[in-house]
Image (cartoon, rainbow, N blue to C red):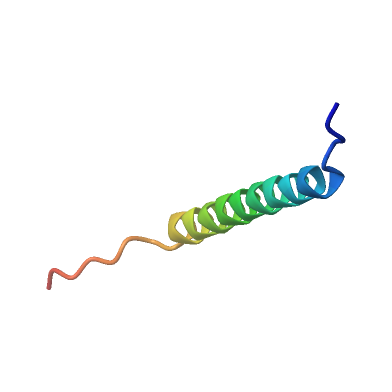
Amino acid sequence: MAKPNYSFEKRQKEIAKKKKKEEKRLKKLEQSTEEVQAEQPPINEST
């Protein structure tokens, strides 16, 4: 029977963690930009 490759499993876990963390960071960034846009009043350029 082949022995398990723990270093491969560990690396895959690390990659999954990084991916999840990056997605979370992007989601937070997106939410913060939406909040800033919502706070700013619309600019009327008509004179």
